[in-house]
Length: 157
Image (cartoon, rainbow, N blue to C red):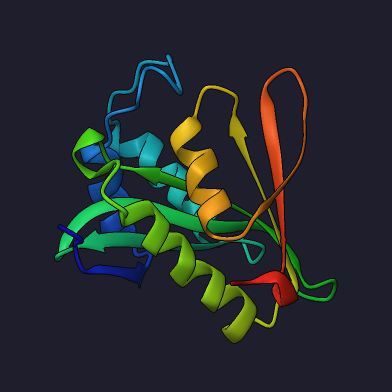
């Protein structure tokens, strides 16, 4: 069953809620994670105020399911990279990431007027690769760690 997915702009409270609940997928990141209030506050101070970034939280039927964001945004050039993480496995393989990405693409191309988006995913993250492909991103190459993808505004499905 498809859940109703909405994006809400990041706030410091949501930033903390996300990282308090976050459970890293060991297939994607084997770095242990433990919530630390000061560390999360510092990351909010640094990233939350960065004008080259826009953070949103993904709500699935009103429940915090993940974060999605634009980074390295260059409004003058019309470009940005993006990132996304779901809180834990409960929200994976349910279409939530795909719907969140579609909404972020609409915001990036429509509201911000960007013309191109880039993304990457570690080789073993086949779910993220599939989400990018479903949303129209084209595979552009790989290195030892990542697969790279690109989407032009006129190519948006």
